[in-house]
Amino acid sequence: MISTRNNFVKNPILILLAVNILIGLFIFRDYGLTWDEPYFYSYGDALGYAYSPANWFSGNFDLNNSYGISGGDHKTRGPAYLFLARNFVYGVKALGSDIIPAGDSASAWHLVNFLFFQLGIYCLYRISTRWVKPSAAFATAVLFATQPLLWGHAFINPKDPPFLTFFLASVCLGFEMVDRIASDAFTKKQKLISIIIPASILGITTSIRVLGPLAGLLVFIYFVFSLYQNKNIKSPVSPWLPFTLYGIIAVLAMLATWPYLWENPIANFISVFHLMSDNPTNLSVLFGGEVYRAGELPRRFLPFMLATTLTEPVWILFITGFIVGYRKLLINKPSDQTGPQKSWVSLTLMLFWFLMLIAYVLLRKPAMYDGLRHFLFILPPVFIFISFAFELLIEKINRMAFSHYWIHAVLLIVIIAPGVVGILQLHPYQYAYYNSFIGGTSGAFRKYETEYWLTCYKEAVEQLNQRTSEPINLFVKREAYIAATYANDNINIIDLRDVTTSAQSGDYVLVNTRTNEDHSTMKGTPIILEIKRGNATFCIVRLVP
Image (cartoon, rainbow, N blue to C red; front, side):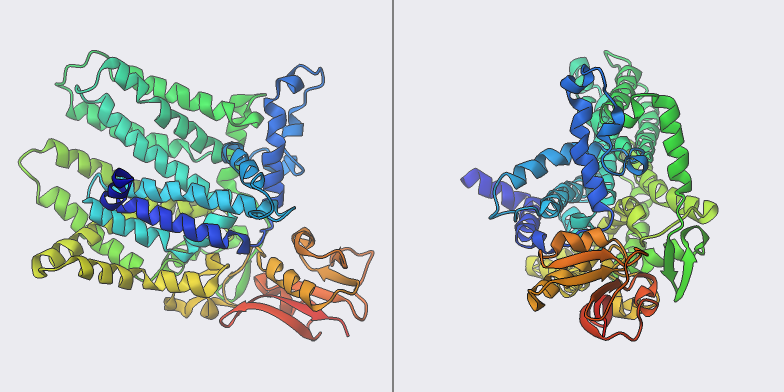
């Protein structure tokens, strides 16, 4: 018991993760289903078919049975995270109705999604300690964890936060693997064993999204530089052997966790890569008060989202950390050049990770929608540079103050305050956060997308459940299946787009405000119920007179 307590004190990152998990256990049921989730989780449930020997030898094995109810769309999405997480979900559901209400599979997924995101927070802390002291890395992890955008997505998004987590883990563990491979302090057996986990994580990352090999590219560049730096070291095994095995294991892990590739691995992977590069979609996006098609958004879309959906201190600290970090590694070099040069190269690879994707978006202009969610995985480098700013602040406080620990705490509280306030005020719609530069989420309303995934349907339908026990019709403008998940038996859910049925007097209509759809759907009909935070309305219920 004493050793465990001391371990927590010496590793405050464990305290942060424990606090996050404790909070998550109290609030995970508050988050509503998004319009992407049912089909994606159906994919996860169906995956078991592909791994059943009984199905293999049945004589009528068909991989299409492992893609779920939306196989034509989702089979091209790598299911590695679903395959890993679904067993944890089944375990959570097995705990009983006291934890997960009967039929509420979405909440089980939300909890597991959030728990997996804690691994991403830990990996950010771990990789940051390559360049800064643990205290600065810890402060960075706290700021990262209290971004409302990330906090909200961590529960409801089974695609983008897992990719962020595994991409970051691939880079973090890959760099550590390279350090072992290029060192003469490890035996041949130790070097070969050390590649298994990093390679498997890279394979899983690629099976989550086809951009995963970019993490392998960063590791490879670092590997080549490390070989150059350590060319005089005598090693019992060529460094290229373990690194080659690293690539082979990564490919095998990708294939093992992605049934769609089994039929034709190379051709199917290439087709998915081309599909995801273009990201074709006809979705409408509200941006700057105008409605655009996703493929026609102006180039300023991504820079704007980066500037306005992260908390106010982030970019100030990033610029400071960028200057301080390179000054530390390039100007204030110790006499031993090997360490600083490797640190400089690895830090530049972090910058490359961030800027390369920005450049691709600005030059290629792929279809973009749903705010920043597709680009969450480019955020860790931003916070890695922020860690240098925290280290500078901590050093200055230590030099100026005799009793400095409480000053550290106050400073960190001030820096994370905008994020914590946003998390509390917007709960459970934190992913709709905008910072004060544009007046918060209230200021963004009617100009930019806020609650674009319709998670507000949960709160709206649950309030409607409490208002009436009489049989009623509830017409839903978009994604009626979400509302059906939460409706009592007396509420008949009807898709408003169903031309065979029309709303009559006494019927209810649920409309979301994505692209201001509520302005064009039965406008003028009395509003009896609104789901909103501040001055931002997310969805409304109308009563047909």
